Figure 1 (cartoon, one colour):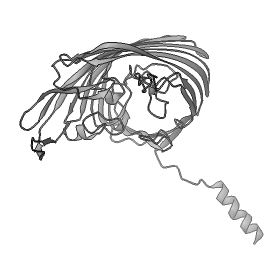
Figure 2 (tube, helix red, strand yellow; figure 1 turned 30 degrees about the vertical axis):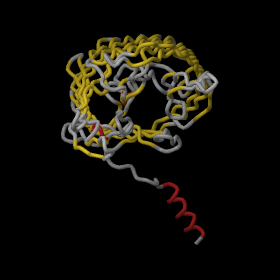
Figure 3 (cartoon, one colour; figure 1 turned 90 degrees about the vertical axis):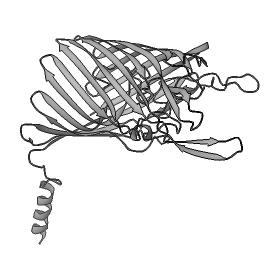
Length: 411
């Protein structure tokens, strides 16, 4: 009996817990990340201050002291990430694959909740690829800054992941891309705050068409993005007698954005840059939004005009094990194409005329480790909105100094 028990336990120990499926391959990846940061004042920085964007404007108390001129800092590890890449069997002549990637960044005020970063399936033919699911927004692109801050160059570099249907075609040195996208975790602004309902009620997804050119160490490309929102489906009006009236409205705000990017990558150094003419891309962590250009006197149905921004960045990195990082970003509010009839605007940073930031970092890199420090001075010029053209006037500068220490273990 004792010998049979020993044999049974040996068989259990030598058998796999989960059998490998035929024609499937799995590869886990991820990292453990710790961010230690300090700011000299309050900032627009979601994810409990980890996703740094820009300094907040002065907020004076009754004695004339700036409430936002208060230092802050913390240490977090909830951006730790886990992912799995899967290779499946062929479907006809196409190779099938899938990806699931999560972290603990959570939603809204919660930063300890597991959330989906990427989840998609893909079919790859010899020259074409079809992707269905959630992954990086095409404006994020193949040219991105190499910095230490979690924001990865935002609010100068688009940062967004969305559910999408994406098709790409490679011919020679060119990659052609087309995507239809829907919002989920990163949403546009409107009368109800940030919500995916503005795009959902529009019944039109976002669209992106772009092309990349690759040759030796060069990568260059450009793209065009379209978004069409329905900010409201009804309007509430209080008449002169104090009675509330509701009207069904048919409102729409449609606008285009365009971008261009370039990168040169050598064995020991890399330089990259991107520029955008952005309209209503606040859901990609850029400054932007829209305002009201007309109000119907009877039904209070509104027309809208986008607030345009020019934003650009350049990034240089030198070294491999010991690496220096230098990043500079600049955004300028270009105003609206039509006059505004109200000071009410929807978006992010619409009272900022200009924003500039410099990231100076140094990191030590091993096959599974990265340890680094970064200094980020950022200045925003706040002011008042000129209703005639949507520009920001009567500006004053506000500056924050951010210091970051980073440790990452990759696997």
